[in-house]
Every structure is written in C-alpha cells, then in structure tokens.
Length: 143
Image (cartoon, rainbow, N blue to C red):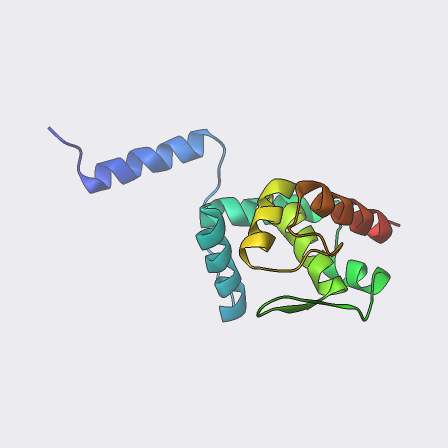
C-alpha cells in the first residue's frame, strides 16, 4: 500500500531533523523574495540551499559595499542590453561565488549567457577571468 502524502511529509521531516536541519519560517520583503526566486530559477537550487549558503558565507565578511568602495570606477562595461559599472560587475561576481556558492565556471557561463561583455574585452568570460576578479575584489575588501 502506498504511503499517504501526510506520512511521506512526516518521514521527510524526520529525516531532516535527524540530519540536524532546523525548520525556519521567515517573512522577506518583495525585493529579497524576487532575488531568491531568480537564484532558484537560474541555479536550480532549493530556497533552503540558497538561504543556507548565504548565511554560511556571512562569516567571509565580503560586503558588496566594501568592494564597491574599494573598487569604485567610472568605467562602464556595455553589452547588448546591459550596462554594468565595473564595481557592479565585481559585486555581482562576489555575490554569485561568495554568497550563492557558484563556481567560477558557473559564473562565467551565466555572464556569457546574459551577454555581459568581459572586463578584459575578450570574446567570452572564462573561469580564470572570473576567478581573478573575485580574488582581487575579496583581497581588496579584506582589512
């Protein structure tokens, strides 16, 4: 006999509890929810995974404001439909790697899919280029 939905949910909740996970209910503003939904759609990760990674990476103390302040530039990177200042691009890379937990390869692929012109005027983003910007940004933001 097949398990009822209620029984499957109860067993799933028990497995989560045994693995040490905690249940959390939060209310977020519409902008935050939109970001969560966009990340879920683009990464295929669960909201739980996205929020957990973001919280775990807070200890890295990599703040977009620190990076923007230390790397403020007026140069614009222009693509088909996107205009990103260098500081915005670097904030995005740091967020995708440091908070969302994407690899440099995944970030490069995403930037290429979005037709964002590479910072070094190459034909396409590479994992090495993304990694170099990430390291430079996080090093510059460190005390």
